[in-house]
Structures are given as C-alpha cells and as structure tokens.
Image 1 (tube, one colour):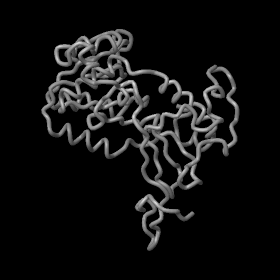
Image 2: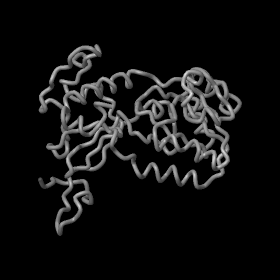
Image 3: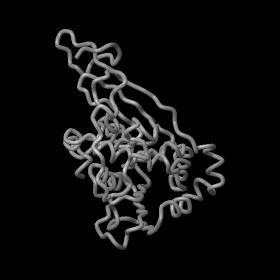
Image 4: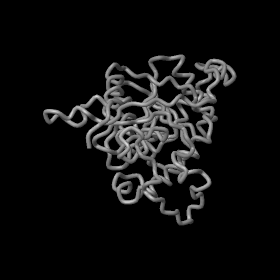
Length: 277
C-alpha cells in the first residue's frame, strides 16, 4: 500500500517502477494453471457466464479466456500508459520483461531486504508518442477509481438477471466494490460457492457465512473437479482451448491530444498528431 498509490509514483517513480517491474517479470514468467483453464473453458461453453477478476497478472487472457467475458477491474500489469494530461497513449498486452535497460531482470532486486538503487528519471519508461510523459503501470492504485466502462458493463449484465451461481474464487471478498458483487448476485437469485485455502483460518472471508457451498483448498485442483460435469476433463479442456501457451499481441491506443482549439477539453482530442505542450 505504500507503493501502489499515485502519490508514491510522484514521490519516487524509480522505486515504484522497480517494484512493478519485478511483479511484471514474475507474472510473465508464470503460466496459467488449471483453474485459469477451467474458467476459460466454462466461458467458451457458456456465453452467459462472466468472470470479474481483481487479478492483474494477465494469466486469464493467456489461458484463452474470451476477452468479452472477462472484466479485470483492477487493470493489468501488461498495460502501460502515459501520465501526461496532454496524452492518452496506452499499450495493451506489453509483455516485455524489461521496459528499459535499467529495469532489466538482472538489475531488479529480488532480496526484499536489499536497498534498491535509485534509477535516474531519464532511464525510466517514457511515452514513445508524446515523448514527454512518463509511462506508468496500467493497474488501479489505491485512491484511484475503477474503470467506469467495465463497471457499467458488469452492472448491465447483472441487471439482465436472474443469476444462477456466483463463484468466489481465491479472494478475501473484502475489497470493494468487487466484494459487493457477492450479495448483489445473491439478490438476483444466485447460490454462492466459495473456493479458498483459508476458509477455516479467516472467518471474515467474503461470502463464507452465507454460502451454500464451501471448498477449502487450491482452486487449481478444486475448480477443474467441480466443473468437470460441464467442461469435461482437463484433456478435453485443453483440446477445446487449443494452444494457449502464448502471449496476446500488443495493441496501442491514444496519443498526444491536438484538438485544443476553442478551449476544448484536453481529453477530447483525436489521440493522433504531433501534440501541443
């Protein structure tokens, strides 16, 4: 919490970028597990199923989860965006292990007690479009609002109710507004199943006190088992999803704002052009 804030980034972008660079490298070195694959298969087989995830590791898309049924409300480590108010440039699915030489894995401290070096600002990632704004991780930090478009899409889906089932997987269910979806789904008729390794250890886990089903253990083992009547065996799941051991292609959006005539809102530009600063 001391690093995942806009204030921390302004105060010490070198430290924040080293923290997130290490997280990116760990996430991109990992592979989707059986739980990611099971949820992806469930989505493919049932187009009226959605996944609201607080994970930022990008493993669900890499598991073959249909993007139109996945709502990463806390953003993604593979997204980076320009911080300039005059620029809206964003890169999606950027899986580079090092965004700059100074953030290379060999230079990123892995010892939590080690004092990280101070990287000069010029050696941190800067926007390739405007050339002025520093890039930042595309995750939702503390004190920031969640993306309205995703929240509206989730609300629209819920409003279509009724809802049959709400799976609460590997989360404390205490971070809002995501935690509120448990009771909202229940209000739409959903039965609740909680899958978590800490069911007996943490009495405050969201959904535990009112859930119809509690599954204690690793979701990578439990989800494929409880969903098998619907998605089939893991061999069938892998056949259904195909080769998912690959990274989605990088896409780009936005850029310097140029339409500033007549006191236009600086966020309303075309996103293309040379820009004015």
